[in-house]
Amino acid sequence: MSAPTEIETISILGCGWYGFALAKQLLDEGFKVKGSSTSDEKLSTLYEHGIEPYKVIFEPEKEAYDLQFFDCDVLIISIPPKRSSGEAALYPEKIRKITEAACRHQVKRLIFISSTAVYGDCNMEVTEDNTPNPDTESGEAMLAAESIVRQKSTFLTTIVRFGGLIGPARDPARFFAGKKDIPNGKAPVNLIHLEDCIGLTLEIVRKNTFGYTFNACCTDHPAKMDFYTKAAAKSGLAIPQFIDERTKWKIVSSSYLDAVVGYPMGTLDKS
Image 1 (cartoon, rainbow, N blue to C red):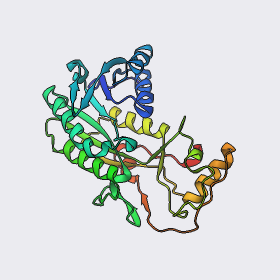
Image 2: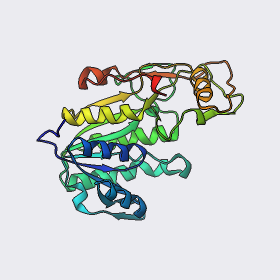
Image 3: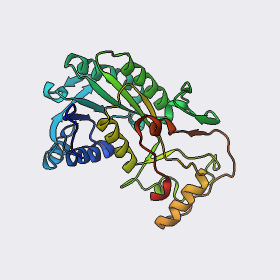
């Protein structure tokens, strides 16, 4: 399918695991793609794959970018806070700076990649109609960032809340392999394959579906102990041992995505 005439150029801020795979697929679909990284090595990789490379830095002590990066029909922000670096506290301000730059350079459409962590474990099924109540630092940072993005009226924003990411180079078996006494074994999982991350993003762009918030998880939600035990056995890794209990949990519904965008989420059978 060729790119729609009203959307020709897409800039991806954050060409990591998802962003880089998305960029390559967008090229195959006929779009012009600009990609960002803070690493010179990654910029070379982007160039080798036909993606226009830009070094884009939005940090407390430094802000540097080529304004041409923001010359696009759609800006996709895919830079979740790094859990290991304590970045969550600084994350909302980073998103504020990025959105202000997007406003200055007259970006008209934006996709912000968020997380189902904004809901917290509320012991119920949640849809986009539920008020998020995060119970982790990263979830709180994501929710604050969503609010910042929504407040900007100069562009139309669609927010996509991904579940836990699995797919190539992210074998779920490695999450718990060999571990023992893992709590909350009966809690349902909320995961999404890279294939669906890319597929639904493409569909949002193709159909010009902006101004929405979508949850994005696979349609099945097996117990954590069942899913990860099966994954470990399939990958030949040490079987994890879970505590047979369900304490805090949630099930994230993605039915709104199918209803509005016409993208039916896949199942976990691919894993």
